[in-house]
Structure formats: structure tokens, C-alpha cells
Length: 450
Ligand SMILES: [Ca+2]
Image (cartoon, rainbow, N blue to C red):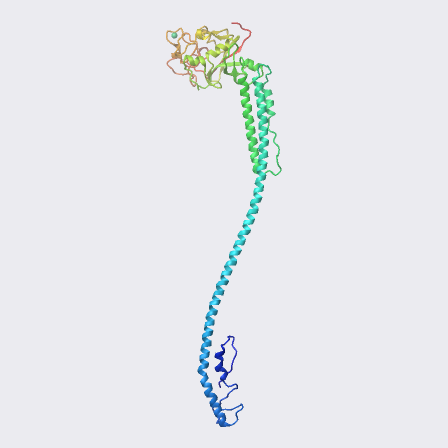
């Protein structure tokens, strides 16, 4: 049984393609091969012959339309295929568009996140900038305070300097006063802001330390300044004016403009000793010429020779006594004191004048009394040769020496040498024993007249 029905499809069919289908009988034709009539005319046709004719007619008409029908179907299929192809393209395009859309969304999201981060970063930067501004303001304030303090310090220092140089007024003040003033300059630190950052505190601490260091420098410099700007006639005067510390002082003997640096020994009883010669470690060569012995040499805080000219001026401004302290390598200490001590001027080659001996070292200088000074290049001794060549120093050589305190500093005491050229004091340890420490110092002795 074959059934033809016109059916609806989702795809619209062109009108011309519908014509063959509409030619098909508007009823259901049932052909039954087993019956004589060759079929059943179930419609308006009733007679067997007429039914057959009608049936054939319909069959012929129907068969004539079959090719058209299939042609129509083929066209529809092609159309459908085209549509499917078109649809496929569209689908692909849609897929691509969707994919692109997704990519775009992703990109937009990414850009949005970037924008957000940018905004957050800028807000943080603005905050940080504000914090930095605050810090800069704090530091500026701090610097202003420090500058003000520093100016105050400088002002007070200038005041101190002017006082120090104002000697004519006689308004001299001691180290104690100076230190009191300088102690008043101690920086008065106070917190400058409640919002100070930790590193600011560190910086302030550093600055305070720097200021303290500066103050210390000022103090030390002022001490030196006071020492050197106020020359004393000798170390006793310095002691009497309150300078009880041993150290370097500036001395200017009376009746001369000659300034000299000396070491004042304020501790050796009773203090006020002006050191004119010192040996202690062999750090200075004492085998020098006349000019050097005249001017002086060495280190004021170590081994040195004050200089014949300086000693001349010092010992001729009053009555001075000489103290010679001696120490051997076993630590034994002795002394030799001379009630008076002075030198004649250079014209007399600094002839030695010493008074009465007193001490426990033995007298090794009186034999040199009244002798001129001799160096390797100026022979004023009474020996046929030059004693300085043999004794390797400068001294008031006779022919030649009971004492040779400017000789060669040998370590250990007893020394081996062709000549007696060590630092010796014959009455103490003999001429072949070089002493470890030797000092010659002078002090006014008002009870002695020369
Ligand atoms: Ca000679």
C-alpha cells in the first residue's frame, strides 16, 4: 500500500514545485491486486468499467507527475543542501563570533583589572607622597632646630674666643670656667614631632652624636686655644693660675717675644716644672748640629730638646733651679738638683752656669759648670778633639763628659760601643750604662740668686 499525502515541512517550498503534488487525487486511492475490479472506487465513481478507466486515467496522470515530483524533490533537496551549507557557514561564523566575544570579554576583564590596579597604585602613591611630605617637613624642622643650636654654639664659642684673646683686661678665666660655659652648650634635645618615623629618630641620634662630637672638638680645641693663646712665662705661672694638668703649654719668657711650646710637668712635686729635655724611648735622634740644638727638636709629648736659645731666655728671666730625674732599666729612680741654672747667650756659646748640687743620683754636672756648648759641628770643649764626635750628642763638654744626657739611647742599660756615647750619668750608673728615662726640668727658685 502506498500512501501519498501532502505534508508540511519546516522549509518553505517554492509555489511552482507544489503543482505536481496538487495534481495528485484529492482522495485516497486504494489499489487491491487481489480483486477483479482492479481496485475500489471509493469516491464518486461507482461502475467497475468507469472505475477502471478513471483509475487508469488517474494512474497515467499520476505517473506522468512522478518525474516532476522527484525533480521537485531534488530541487528541494538541493535547496535544503544549500540552506544547510549556508546554515553551516552561519553556524561557523556564529561560533567564531562567540569565540571572539569570549576573547573580547576576557580582554575587557583583563583591562578592567589593570585599571583597578592602576587606580589602587595611584591612590597608594598619593598616600606615600603625603607621607614623604610629612617626613620632609619633619626633617626640615629638625634641621632648623639643629642649625639654631649650632649658631648658638658658634656664638658662644666666638664669645669665649674674644674673652680668651682679651688679655689686657686681665679678666682671665681658667679651664674650669671655660668648661662650665662649654658644658652649657650641651644640645638640649627634645622630641620635635609625635609622628616621627623610626629612621628619623636614627638620623636625629646621628645628628646629636655629630653635635656632641663637634662639641668635644670645640672643647679640645678651646683647651689648646686657651693654652696657646695665653702664653705663660713658665709652667709655674700656669700652675699658679690653676692649670694643674701636665701637658703642652705655650710659654713666652719675659723681655722677649719668643714663643715656645713646652711640656709642663705639674705633677712632679711640687709642680710647675718646665721640661727642657727628655729621653724615654729612643724615638728621637739627638746627634744633631749646632743650629738644631739652638732651635730645639723632637716631640713635646715625647723625647725632645727645648733648644739652647729657649733655655737661655727662660733661665734668664729669673732665678731657676734645675732638676735632673734619672731612671735605670731596673726602675730605680734618682735625682740631681742644682740650686741655680742658667745659660749665657749664644755669643758665649750658651755657657753653663749651675749652682749647688743636691740629690741622690750623684753630681755629674758640676764638672761641666762654666763650659760652653759643643755639637758635632761646633767644637767648644777643652779636649783636643771634638767631644761631640765621640759622645754622639750635644753637651757642655769638658774633656769630655761625666754626664751625657743627649747621647745615644741604648736599650737595656749596659751597652757596647767604641766610645762612651750612651745616655749616662756617671755618678749614678757609670759611663757605660745608658739610662732608660731622663728628664731635665727647671723651676723658679726665688731663694737663690746668681
Ligand atoms: Ca775640642
